[in-house]
Each structure stands twice: as structure tokens, then as C-alpha cells.
Length: 185
Image (cartoon, rainbow, N blue to C red; front, side, top):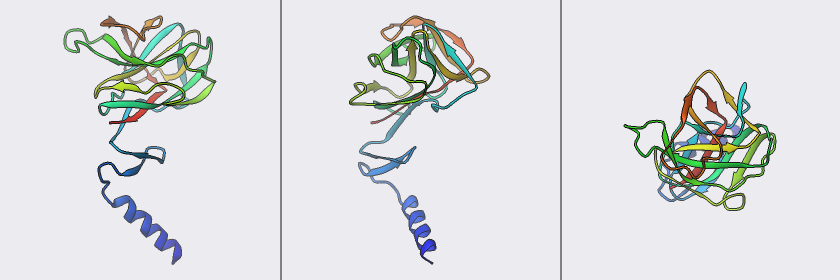
């Protein structure tokens, strides 16, 4: 009987509508207060392939779900390489006329990564990143590699650190990066 009541209470709590500004559970079950949760990028998980080199890669598979700030970044690193990793928020200045051109809206400084799943929080690991609904998340790394799939999805890449680029043309390729961001409006 006790188990039944606990389950019933949990079901009722999950079915109750959330109030604006109330504390609620998100994604991984982490409590968050105020504003709607914004997500950007693809799940940071151990994937069957990886992409690497001295390049900037932009994940095109899940754009920002809202406008606000990104306060948590997750990535699955295949190999660390040079300790020069940065995450940026990118947008297309002219999506209709130049769909492969991007401008970096905001970026972290260097992030200290390890092989495997890495989680970074603002403040502390980086300053919260500005994001606008429809933006993309990208990463620059020098000599390392990030987990990815090579058989589905759309991404863009360009050699070098492009975390300060303006209306710069990238090359499209098929992949899903293990790079994800979360924040609030």
C-alpha cells in the first residue's frame, strides 16, 4: 500500500502544470529556478566515431530552443590533444543567401578537458554565453578530438580557431557531435 501511495503521489506531482518562475526538474533531474530551460546541440555521449584536428566544428542537429544564456556545457572528448578547447555560440547572418556562413555570437575561454564526458558550469568554469533561439553550438580544439557519428546529421567545420569569426564560410559534412548546452531564458 505504501509503495502504491508513493507512486500515486509521484504521478500526481509530474502531471501538475509548472508555474512560471517556479523551481522544476529538467533533463537530468537537476533543479532549476526561473525561466524556461534552453537546450542547444546534441547529447554528449560516447559515439562510434570522432572528429579532430586544429578546427572549429558547429553542430547543426539541434538549434537553441530559446533566447537567454547557456550556463552548462557538456562534451564527450575522444582525445585531449593540446589543452586549447573553446565552445562558441554561432548564428547564420544570412541563412537564405549564404547558408554555410556563420558568425560567433559568444564563446568561452580555454576549457580544461579530460578524455570522456566533461561538464562545465557558469559561473566558475566559464562566463555564461548569450544565445538566441535558432543559434548553433560549436567547439574549437587543437590536436584533440570529440566524439561524433559519421553516418547522420549535419555539421560544419573550418580549420583554426573560429570563435571570433564574422560571416565566415564553413564546409558542411555529415555527423552528430557529442556537444550540448543548457541554460535559461
